[in-house]
Amino acid sequence: ALLYNEGAVVAQTATFENCTFNASAKAEDKAAIEIDSRFTSYDVNINNCVETGFDLGNVSGNSLWNQKFGNKTNLWVDGAQKLTRE
Image 1 (tube, rainbow, N blue to C red):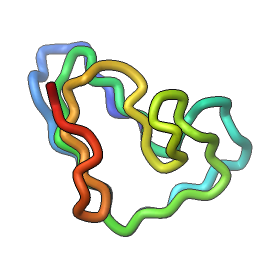
Image 2 (spheres, helix red, strand yellow):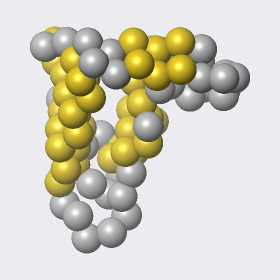
Image 3 (tube, rainbow, N blue to C red):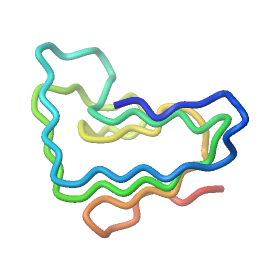
């Protein structure tokens, strides 16, 4: 999943619940959920999700999520805050 927008949307909320992400082949440095918040602020909630076959995110080092660009994300994974929007 890619969270990205370069239009007029100022802020978005994305929630992933009970998801299973399966990659047929690893894409180098790509996690299951890639977040690009250069132009839009995001509140992202990931709850009870798993991934199989993804690479580690090039910034996060995590295979489930990766904040690839920007710093406008509040991220919670299973109730624990991982990123705080700047």
